[in-house]
Image (cartoon, rainbow, N blue to C red; front, top):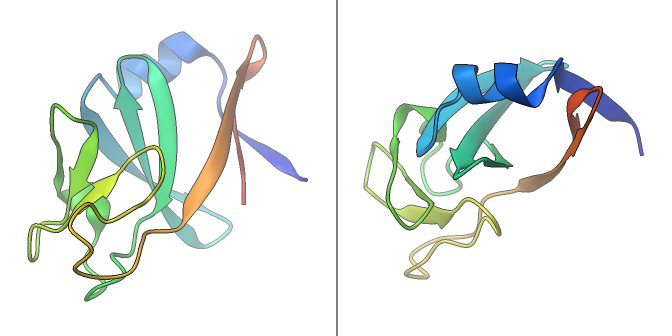
Length: 106
């Protein structure tokens, strides 16, 4: 696995992506929706599997679901599962936090 550093520290990550929010990251030309749920970070492919809308332009609800801005489909930040089985699931990427920073594997 090739881990890619996306933030130099957890503090910087939390300042950039506050609790219950998301941010678009572009890593190696791939668009990623990074979410923060109570200090835990999760990464989904930014492209909604239903119609291709940008998930990072949606909101993150109190359940930790990313809500697509186009048709309001809800995806678990943790698993990528679409909660109502209306479409396929979002692709998830592994995140790890170490003292050297926050990393993702794509």
